Length: 339
Picture (tube, one colour):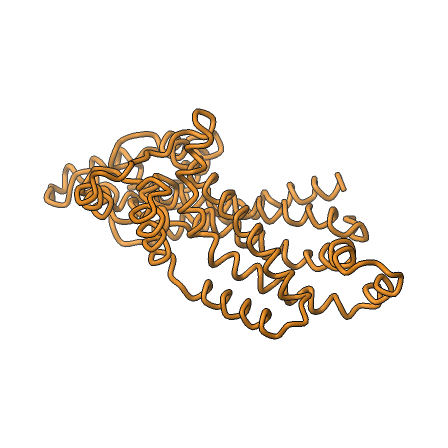
């Protein structure tokens, strides 16, 4: 096991290297000039533009620029935002905890919803229950995240007032949240307190965005659980367990579910990697200052160094999550051995 972990960690080096090359190359293929962004598009003085390009090293060959950038990244320096002038490492340190917590929260909710629903559908003999589950999961997969988030806000925050409306007052920064705050001033407002500072308020504030992300993922995981259980329940060892007189809940819990979860873990790993960078819409709807929202703002503002860092960090985290999924297999199935 330890040998396998070391081998996988060593293999991560060329994978991350290829990722860095692709990220750097794609950023240079995007139209636009960071030097022009710094000067402003109304400033077309070629002398000033050339001076800024020289200061940024953009006048050098691409391979030289990549070497300098990679050296800075390996030393922990992700560069500087061309819009704000702040270190990207500082910006990432502020945004990444929001995205990580949102992803973990959403995965936890998705699993808590999906496993009972999928287990019920995969073990029941009722066509009505199975059909209802299939319909609900298909609906969950079909609904767009921005609509689900907006409906959750209207239902749970505006009408029931169970959760605060998470608003930021800046009109340019979050126009929908700004207008909502002006039209509904009596609603409670929360600004995402830290998990360590106020854990209950933090979990309460993140519940709606996490639930919004959990809905489609819970639907996908539930369908996978159902399909796996349908395949497993015909196996001989399940028939033997029933022949021994074990109750159906014991058969499902001890013999069916554990083996059926192996493909489900693969899907959960993919979903977790997706949530690290694919929660842009939800972060924008709920005005969460996470990595996805930071990447979206970098695209709009043409802040290419920030966008480059966001893509690099998200892809690296995705690779690490899949490594953890591979290692988790051995706990589900002791027959799996890593050479």
